[in-house]
Image (cartoon, rainbow, N blue to C red):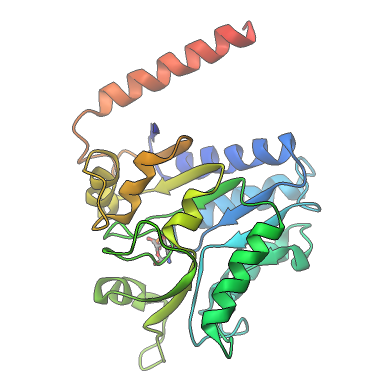
Length: 264
Ligand code: GLP
């Protein structure tokens, strides 16, 4: 695991956006896995800015989002499709036909999940998967005790997740308890994973992800088994880690090595 500890949320967003932009420059027709929640919002703002400055184009990029609420269609302001359109897609030069979010209004959600898996396969798989993390260590909507081998499926949300996301819903408004989410195995098949987290509220989940045992009780801990993961966090999210100075030292050495290889 590459662990990058930065000063604050702005630095995390800039680093994350840059990582994705480099991926698009390497391969303009890249397939990205995208995430919702408050964590990626600033990162998306960075992408929008760089796109509007014509320094990166999304014209050939395809995207697959991690998850969606079951019971909300894409017109619903709390749906993740609506979120993605508002926070990113409507402001960049991407072809909306190349953007995919699980269908929360599907008549048959079980077959919608299988079709989603097939659509990812048809595109040749995800190259860079962006992840946030829930306070309980969930990724996508893979809640604690999710099978570490799971595929895209319908998942029941924990009370903690429902409570954490209540802030987005008006009082008395229907808030879904079920979701469609990529499975943990689906996520693990991405060639590369970029997890971002900021704030003290994520510190325990980050500790369990990086230093805890691999356990379905902290789904993000499976990332220890992935060969190419970068975890980008601010100081607040890093505060429970045992040995931040060691992680910073590794990162410095890595940068030194890369510079030497490039002949800088
Ligand atoms: C939701 C999403 C996750 C996200 C998590 C954290 O439950 N399904 O993909 O990582 O929330 O959200 P936030 O970034 O708002 O803390």
